[in-house]
Image (cartoon, rainbow, N blue to C red; front, side):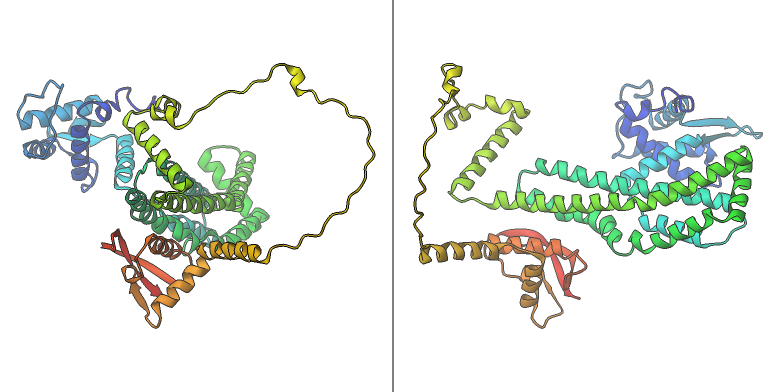
Length: 458
């Protein structure tokens, strides 16, 4: 890579003026991408950058030789710097007009950085449909088509792996949220909007790989056994790759094998994505319930202790090992050691053999009242567990004859009611539920503030 990119290529994006450089690069790219090529007259670009520096919202240039120049001097200075760093090249045509061109590698990098900045997500459906169409179609250039199938399969697998890693990052960042509001905002406004609705939900419905995979694998396996097809592919790959016919044939078999194996092993990635999605949503809800609980029992007191430790560690910027330096822990918990005199304290003396005389075991009848009381407590605990079936019945009972209603219209008098609304929103993404949800605007009801959503009967 460093044989292609200049050694100082990334200096603009790591300098104190990185905001200025990136703004100018984006403006230059915006002007150039509407032309027939990425080449524009220098004066046109200087005028564009001059207008940028004349705006009050433009960033200030520091630690550059043209920092004190006027707006036009800064514009020319930026172009000189970008040329020196290898982002652009300036050439003079036959009319002695200077034209600015982006380097080919600069164009690709800028497009990638813009997609990252815009939060653009991968459209899995496009890759799957492309592979499916290429596999089913007939063509006079099977070698080129096979390469395109392989490239789209690689992009699909890469996208699924990125989604898997993205969910893991959300799980790791969950511990950074200190309040219920932050957790719910991360869950509903960020995770569900950017991950579940845009990618995960499609993988389970419209973009489900299982709809296309059997036919894709069957057709590719059939072609691998077709002698005429393999000869055509090998001949075309030999010309494209400039290799021998034998090597091209081996390469064609390897391409087909990699594609088929990728689709067969795709379930492992999808299962891990499903597990991490469930893990994140469960962890978010459990953490919110933990922060909402404020009882005076042991659990509530432990919660307050842990929250207090967490606040001190955050304020003092401590790592996990620094918690033992917190002062109030010395009075809260006292640890001591217990030792033994010598190794003989572990010695158990050998006892002689004794005659075993069995004794009669008295039959004891269980206390019906105590048994009924424990059974009742167990039943109450099971009734408080919120399963998808219970949430579905709860919504049907609340909606009655209505076809849709607002979540804010549900009972919301205590914490348990709010937790039910959370589960209604979470389970609304499942296809086997009797309702669907659609986010609307933020509301505050009964002291609880959340993003309201419509509940529609299927």
